[in-house]
Length: 247
Image (tube, rainbow, N blue to C red; front, top):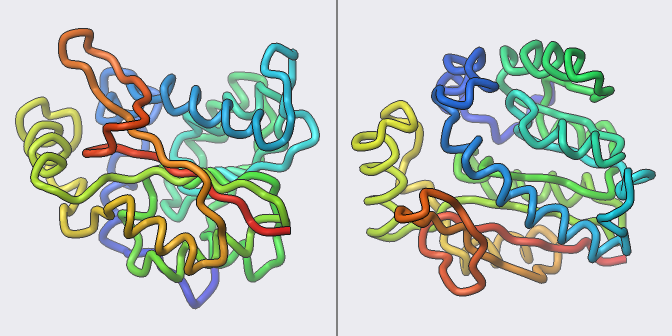
């Protein structure tokens, strides 16, 4: 792995401890399983729009090389592979990789899982049409340096989809007090509110890394319906962005 890295050891240890639970829909990653259909809705729409793909086709992302950085157990890598993408799943938490490999094999999917970092992949000259950068940027030591590496990993005209958590009193209440202490969806200490990033801050970081932001959308949770949805107005807690590398 590259000597220059934005990986933070304490953050990696948190996810190492939970590695075996990635595919347990009622385990420590229950929030991601609940959010995943909404994440996939956004991701597939953005990729299809950017690359002119028909989502009704059997394998609409055929011919696209995609990196799922911070892939965990493969919750996004697997559906991307099913849609035809050539997927590399990378994670700095070593214990996640064998879990992801075994599940992909059981699912009959060919996915190139690697224990590595964005910086190491960029240094090696790897290039992708799409970089999925979901719920990672709030866990790294240097977001600006990390996003620069993600930019280097994109081909000209490539698409980065990056999601994170907003920083405000509401996100502290919902993402930390609610998710970690009340609902116990996540182990206490999974997130640090000071590392959350506002949409304006993230757009500035993305632009500073050499990418053009083109969209930002909220992920909102409806407690009455007990499900997630996309919102073009409410980015107060969870949100996602799309940005393009200039040609």
